[in-house]
Length: 282
Ligand code: ATP
Image (cartoon, rainbow, N blue to C red; front, side, top):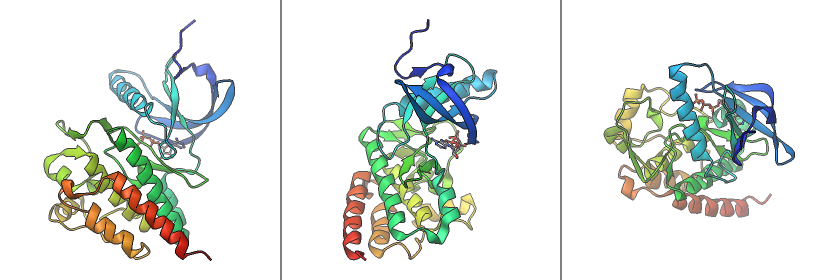
């Protein structure tokens, strides 16, 4: 019999269910995993196809899985393991039933209460602060890459671009999420923990604008010009002034050395949420 590591499973341990979505590698399906004598609901990422191209994809997918294995936090999608005894390969993830955050915001729009939006920003800040403590640069923070559970917990997902380290310089051209990039990434192709802070600030814009795309009426080229020339997004007025000003003055900052860390952001929002709870005891 094959000797399995604690995070390796056999295909026979997974009961496959309905389709949840399509990812870059292939399908994502709901499933049930037999784990430590119990049945656990999971989301299963499957690799598609065979041949040379998929070998590269498989390597990328396994790299993403290995990276995610280091993390265990309420606001990060948890990985249970992989099943690699047969093709297609399975990546076994915590099932987050609510789906992607941007879709939730677009669907529920104006009905989302301010308190819920602030809690979204808070959850994402805690998750990203945790990743940063492990010097992981996520590189693709955006509402589309967060999942939102039915009990309203944000889970950061999609570690396909993530890298360990304090900085990462892009050398080979790659498709990038232009409208979420920090100004210094646009000009130098350098990513850092602070460029994640900037993208987090763009995600806050999405949270307060019902999942509207940032720089909605601009082309990528114009959005780049705006950000590099020091312009920033205008956050809708449902966002409290205190938070809006924090984002403008501490996050949408051109010099990454003057931009706050995610630990600073977490501390700010935690305090804001406490004050907000005091003011709105109705
Ligand atoms: P892309 O890079 O194109 O966004 P991907 O390969 O990273 O795709 P995901 O975006 O992670 O794939 O997954 C595709 C879809 O599958 C998501 O939009 C979501 O609807 C669903 N999904 C992914 N992970 C989970 C999960 N853990 N729980 C529930 N649904 C999930």
